[in-house]
Each structure stands twice: as C-alpha cells, then as structure tokens.
View 1: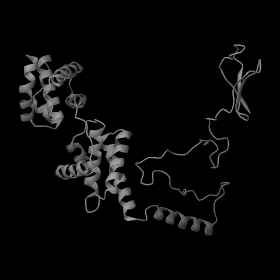
View 2: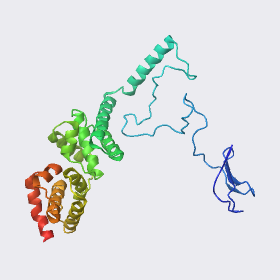
View 3: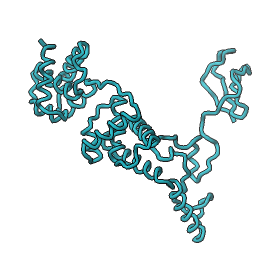
View 4: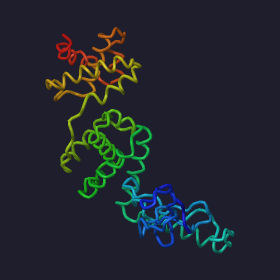
Amino acid sequence: MSSTSQIRCPSCAKNTMQTDVTTGEMFCRNCGFVVAEKIEESGPEWRAFSNDESDRSRVGAGTSLTMHDMGLSTVIGSADKDATGKPLSASMKSSIERLRTWDSRTQTHSSADRNLRQALSELDKMKDKMALAESVVEKAAYIYRKAMEKKLVRGRSIHGLIAACLYAACRNTETPRTLDDVAESINIRRKDVARCYRLIYKELDLKMPVADPTKGISRIASTANLSEKTKRRAMEILNKAKKIGMVAGKDPMGIAAAALYLACISNGEIRSQKDISIAAGVTEVTIRNRCVGLKTLLE
C-alpha cells in the first residue's frame, strides 16, 4: 500500500513523491530517487480490535495524575456482547457481571487507594466549579500524591487537604484564585484550607513564586463590569508600583482592587469602593489603605 505526497523530488524537482507504507520508503515515481528509508508510520492502526470499525486510533487514552490509577487499569465494558457483536448467554452474562464487580473492587483494594480515589473525585468537581486549566489540576494531583507519600493525609480531612493542594497549585502556576474561592468551591471553612496549606507548604518544602497583582486585574474588572480603558490604566499604575517595589508584601487582590479604583477615578468611570471590594473579595478599608500609597504614583 502506498500514498502520494506534495513534496518535490530533490533530484528531478517534480511533485511525484510517493510513500510505500509496507517497506517504509519515500521515493519518486518519475526518476526512482529514494528520499528516506524506514519511515515511522504515524497514522492510525489498520486493524481495529473493537466492534466499532471507525475507531482505529493507534493508542488509548493518555496517562494522567488526576486518575487514581493514572489511566493504566483495565476496564470491562458494560455491553453484554461478544467480539462478533452477538449477545451473551445468561450464564456467561452472570460470569461477566461477577468479573466486572471484582475488577472494580480490586482497583481500590487498600485504604490509600480509596482515599486517593475520593480526593481526585473531589478535585474533578472543583475543577469544573472554578473553571481551572488541566495543568493546574495535574499539579494539584501531583502535590496530593506527594503528601500521601509523606503520610500527611492520615488523620486529616480529605476535603481540606485536596483544597489546600489545589490552592498551592494555583499559586505555583500563578492562577488568580484566592483561599476564599477554593474554600467556597468545596464548601469548607477558609481556616481549615489555610491550616492544611501551611502544613503541606512546610512539609513538602514548596517553592511559591511571588504573587503578581496584575493577574487579578482582568478578573476583578470583568466582575465589576469595568471598561477596557480602565483595565489598561490600572495595569499602568501597577507596573509603576512594581518598578519601585511598592507591591512587595501586599495582598495581590487588594492592591489590584486599589489600582482599579484609582483608574476609575482617573478615567471618570463611576464605581464605589464597595462595588470593587465585593468584586475583589477584599474589604473597603484594604482598598483605602492601598490607595494611599498608589496615589503618589499618580501625582
């Protein structure tokens, strides 16, 4: 079997290149020049081992840390049919049902596996609620597995620890999510998430980048329904503040909210401190205190 290609032949400069998938050679049909040998086949498999002949993918689903078995376990399908598509007999159907039951039981035979399965199930729910990227969830699953290796899970709440791991992953990937957002998504107290976060930060020796307040500008502005011009003005104020080191040690959401409030005043957009404080999840006092330092930049 062979396939044609639009590549020009380096010998005769004609579009007559052809690939022979049997021998793995790419050659010219006009002059016979062989360009490459033993080409690796990158297309789908020719044979399909399932009833669906259209499914000829070369490999299965990729491995992922967000699955308790990393996607490497065997799954017995729910269809009670054999390889030819015929329905199973009653005795065979009961045997397959027992095999299916034991297959699911043996995947989580220890308490650690059950713990991990429940934690990653909660993590999947939080991912949808908080609209997080796949990379953030993968990082959170990696941190939780490290916490299990250090035996930090025993005697502690699964919800609190997986929420703390997700918050650590957000901090590590510079995703603008606060402790309140994480605690609200899993419906536990902020204090419990903070306690677990301090534990894993200390025990796992995590290295967290300094939070960038400019990451929270878009989120606060969209919640408060602010204009694009105000967002750009707030970014200018924060960039000036970062150059002189004014944002170091400050709450990123608080200083971002203060920059947006000053940008609203500068552009004549009417927004109260209360509106912006609700959108940012900080108090009005925080915004007033941060505005004192940022006003010097405007002057």
